[in-house]
Length: 182
Ligand SMILES: [Zn+2]
Picture 1 (cartoon, rainbow, N blue to C red):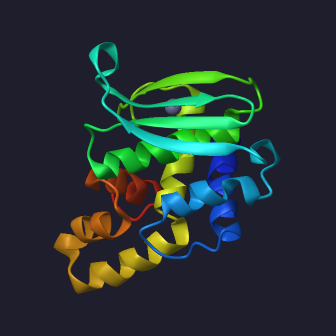
Picture 2: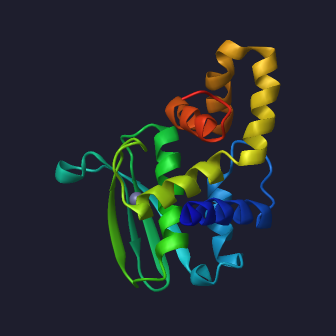
Picture 3: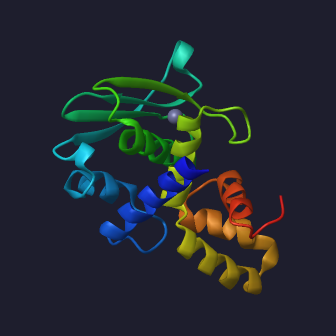
């Protein structure tokens, strides 16, 4: 699917521009430097991440992205684990980069569901972007083969810790890269 490939390539290009070559991927660095990249839609944009207590209807929401002309705020559910928060932030960055040309103001409530459930193409793209950003293809393939030789049984837990992602997200990524059987 072309749009999913575009999402992955956008994340790859971003990592390359920012010289990020090791795990765990430093999300703060990416966020701080985004407005200096060649992504025109983000130039001059101030991006802020806040961790918030989500109450009531928002209790199960992972993150909310609010974008105005010169400012974007990603509010993340402070109740969620660090790894889940990282994925949510990366996912919202995907929306910001891939989908923010369309409207000046976009408010999204992102409900965290597993990637195999029915999602809109925008959601799938944001997930592809997040997976590539947090688990860059080249790095994860190298690490996978290194670790799998050392100890096959612990490869998932070791790599999940190294990349600061959930074991579920890592497993899904490895299946997508044909390194694991579904
Ligand atoms: Zn989303």
